[in-house]
Amino acid sequence: MTQRSALLAARIVFAIGALAVAWTSLLPQDDLPSTLLVSDKVIHLLAYAALGMLAILSGLTRIWAFAAVMGWGLALEVAQGLLGYRSFEWADLLADGLGASVAIVVTGRVVTELRARQQRSNQEAKRALRRKRRERRVTPERPMNPAKAAARRGPPTWQQVVQKQGAKCWLCTTRTYVDDHRRDASGRERLGRTYPEVDYVVPVERGGTFEDSNIRLAHRHCAAARRKNPALMTYGKPPRTFT
Image (cartoon, rainbow, N blue to C red; front, side, top):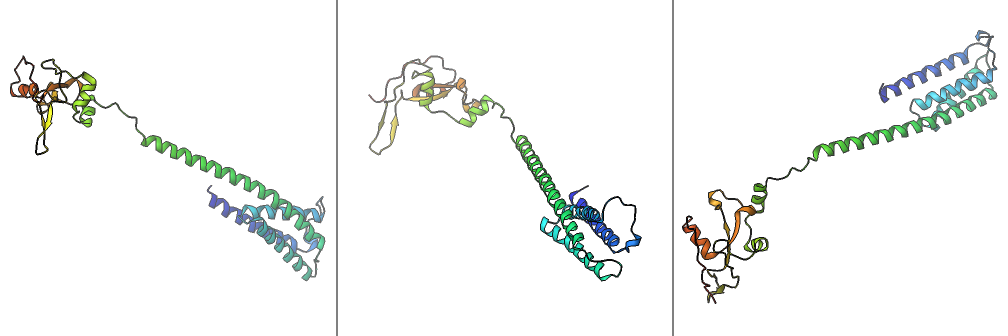
């Protein structure tokens, strides 16, 4: 049963209870059962306690529930005073108010606590659902293929290669010279034959990658000679262009 249907059922039962109390209150005294073992005031207290409980369960606040139940009780007492066979009694109205008050306070506290628990439970369920959704969205990171990682990094600089492999040319096994360069009169920088350059074991245009295993440091002269003649096996030490 949903919360809306339960509220509707409580309101229907509250209305039926109010009509039942009115029917018994307006019956002639002789038509009431004479075998009851409790006094008339206890019956009033229990009846209006039940009405107060049903008023809270039907969705009324405590103030409006008390006002509705006592308004109904006052109206019935006035109706009894207007009838010739019943009478208005303040003691009955006091019993009505006592029963309604106790039932409304107790039921109100119980309903408030149950609603708070339900709200906490709903919030916890929502948080758990959000956690599950976040866990589904987060996918474990897979180790990237070395070739793809190198391609993402792009071509290295000769400074990076020097830090990993040293400053010697891998073709002629002699050192490279970072000062083998000069700036001409036009401001253009000219690099010498022994200036360091990044070389590739397998050229990139032939399928070579930017992985460390395919990267070497070479003189500009040696790298150019290798590109010109890939079958070349020996490389002499190139002279410096700028001394």
